[in-house]
Every structure is written in C-alpha cells, then in structure tokens.
Amino acid sequence: MSEKEKNNTQNSGGKKRDLILGGTVNEESIHKLVDKIIEINRYDEDKLEKDSSYTPKPIKIYVNTYGGVLYDANMLIGVIESSKTPIHTYCSGKAMSAGLYIYVSGHKRFASKLATFMYHDASTGQKDTVEGLKREIDHVEKLRDRYDQYIISRTKLPKELMDKTKRHKEELYLFADEALEYGIVDEII
Image (cartoon, rainbow, N blue to C red; front, side, top):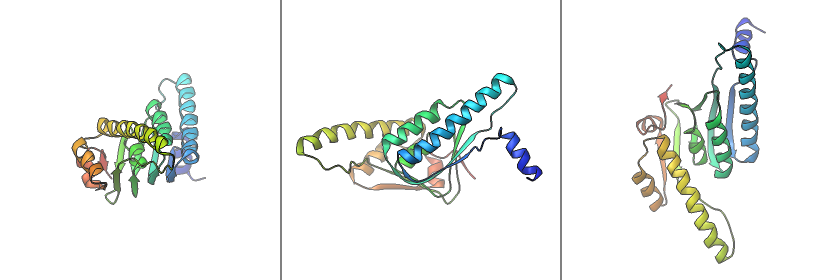
C-alpha cells in the first residue's frame, strides 16, 4: 500500500466513504447504501467518544440513476437526514426522478458541468380494479405532493414550474448550470 493510500485510509477511519447509487432506485440498491451509512456513523460515533477532537470526513454519494421507487428513496433520505456524519451528494451523469429526490437530500451537493437532472410527475405503474385505482391515485397524489414539498424545501425550484411540468405531462430536464441557478446544486466542480 502506498503512503497516499495509507493516509487516505487513516484519515477516513479505515472506512470507505465513497458510495455509488447507480441503476434503479429500489430496495436492493438503497439497503446497500443505508447499511454502509449506518456503519460509518457508528464508527464515527465510537471515534468521537474516544477522541473529542476527531472530525469525521464526509460520506460521498455519487448519484447516477434514472430513478425508481419513491418509497425506497424515502428510506435513504431519512437515513441521510439523520446522519451525524455529513453526507455530500455528487452527480456527474444523471440524477433523475427519485434520483433527483435523493440527490437534493445531501448536506452539500456537487455536480460536474455535464450532469443532467430531471423532475417529473409521479407514476404508479399499477393495474387494478376501478375502485383500487381510485384509492391508488389518491395515495400517489399525496406521495407526489410530499415529494414536491421536499424538493421545494431544499431548492429554489419554483412550484409553478413543477406544476406546469405535471400539467403538460412532461419531464423537466436541467443541466448543471441551470440546476445551480435553481439551488439544486451547491457547486459545480
């Protein structure tokens, strides 16, 4: 192991802090990240108990996904929000749909100039009876409204623009410079 590698391992407490969210947002992809975030937080808490001058290095989550299941995204967002170790999100490729939702949960958010972000209305993908669909629509509307409120609370993306996107059944694509203007990205790297 080179001297640089030894220093990086020692500085991060021997814990890998670079995590990747790629592919579909689902239980499997989220559980792997949640498990690692919890492990790093426990490690950092133990280190802080032994050494009050210990400063945990941030966990970096590299987001590159077209999105997936909002319920699973909610789990990861809850863990990110409760993490005592800072979590920074990075996007160099794509953070779309549920991936955008997760990306904006980062304590600090970075993007390369080639990154693309996408917002759209929630979809159900469900097939059911008429009464079942009515219940499903009501629930998905509430879920979507929470998704929208969360994004609004973490960015400067105007609700009117989000509503227009939904009304026209479109996707809202933003490049890194546009996402920076809307407060989705904190810094372009």
